Length: 495
Ligand SMILES: Nc1ncnc2c1ncn2[C@@H]1O[C@H](COP(=O)(O)OP(=O)(O)OP(=O)(O)O)[C@@H](O)[C@H]1O
Ligand SMILES: [Mg+2]
Image (cartoon, rainbow, N blue to C red):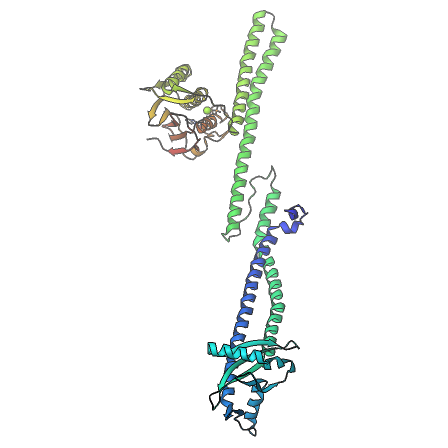
């Protein structure tokens, strides 16, 4: 809309303004409804009251008018001041006429009400009274704009002839009451609205004050004071929960920044070692190698270190891909048992070197549809961890098995195990159980495993008992999964 394009002052966009504005708007609507209902009610009451007064007066009038033959006369004592007063009041506006509409008497303070003696009007009203058997009540306005309410009915004389009798009262007093009521509304409604605006502005400001503490704390957060905590107010309300969430986020940010910092240190260290080795080998070759063989050996050694560097860089690339959910997937039908068997064979040499008994125990074909390269990476990581974290003399077992619509891959070992408090974190990037695993590693292997399993729509379960061993179970859908399910890690001590 066009006003959206108008420059909006900052105040209008504040939460405080909007909260107070909403309160005020609701209050104004309620007040308007009350005012309309009050006015309608007042009109109703005044109208009923006026009708009732007229009916009472008509009853009194009929009692005071008597007939002598064919002539009406007032039957009251003019020397009695009370009765004289009644007569004066009843004849404020007063008309009496015969059946043919001929006026007998007419009195009114207001001469502009002469229209009430109009013959045609009288005859029309007589016809209406005869038809409905009810008095006629009407409102007429004098030329001075004064409203009168008039009631007309019939009387019967001694001869049985009908007479037209009308009597009325001015509505000036009723209108004064209405005017006073309207004036009071016009004075008190704006006052109530101003009061409501002040109260809602103040209370919205009070309620939002705690937000300012979150705001100023958030502004103070920098790389060096991550983990900053805002004190709770103790009200246990929505704002306290916001503060809790902020503190929790701050703690998580701190932990993850610390991990990244640790990672940078680890990566620099990992990169520096092969680089220093390559530099040393090439310098030695340059200054001391005299034969072609010596040069060749130096280049071969340098190439090995270059390969280590390349592996590291590949791991970092894969990590950034898995973090942004871009793992390349090329699914094929394959036998998971055969795949595990092949990799177990490749690991026999390092296992023997570590004096470990590595066995493969798949007993049946395990058909499934997965990305071979990625699942090889999963098995390789799990097996290399098992070898790395199992002391000499231990055993490692790997197998796959069908599980209804799923397949299960298991790698278990009799190694050092993982303390229960660390299990929820081992799939985090760069997370390594600090002690007693002094082995080299970046803490990335299991985060790749988790990302790959997630991309396949599978789950990982870890059972581990420190000092006894660990069991990693990967459950994957046998056929192509259309939706990747969230990864779930189940932790419990090994049976
Ligand atoms: N089979 C296991 N037995 C005992 N601890 C394990 C086992 N597998 C993983 N862990 C623990 O989990 C941590 C995370 O494993 P992960 O494979 O992610 O990292 P890493 O092996 O230390 O390093 P990387 O795999 O990047 O070379 C390891 O540091 C280790 O403490
Ligand atoms: Mg590992």
